[in-house]
Image (cartoon, rainbow, N blue to C red; front, side, top):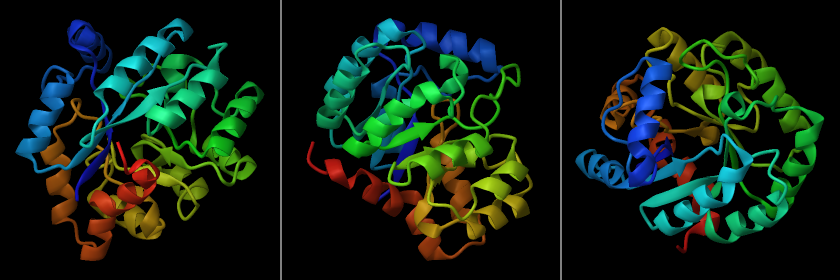
Length: 265
């Protein structure tokens, strides 16, 4: 079982616009147009069993439409981390829909313009914890390097300490380009860290050391496809000098357990 916990796709009518905007912002060429059909084709090519589509509403009004599309798209191979915007006034109602029809939530504080540990977010986290809905945070800098960091490892840790039962995933191994801070605040803690935009952005020896130092049941394979080719990161992990059991956990076992509450689609 191979599960990519961190991918992106948009409905066909907006995928081209999303691609153009993100390529311009990040200065990176996407592997393909970001559609669900293209994601499935690349999964087949790379023998990936399940991918999780992570979506973000940059405006509160976008929340219901984005999530309705995700609910319709979700199946056994495509799972969905839905969108919530802190300023969306019907967030409690939307969380219950996500609990029933989705798999988790994606928060992107750089695009949604909030600090992850702001007091205004605490009722939202409290409800997520009560409903047992996993949440994946963008963590660290943006690829463009042009945005303020709203989700540093130290801020992520404050949420972990305040909501000990909240199932949290820190994208980009807890803090893109903030690896020293990730080591200080998050390594070894009860928080999932995904591998998207991690490999190749620090020395191989450092990446290996961080993988071995973190909890083996709290590391998830993620790519940020289609910004990154899934095959590239798969091959990186397979070639790494780490125990075979850890590779198995990273590539699918940990994510399978994280998602198992929604084993029936």
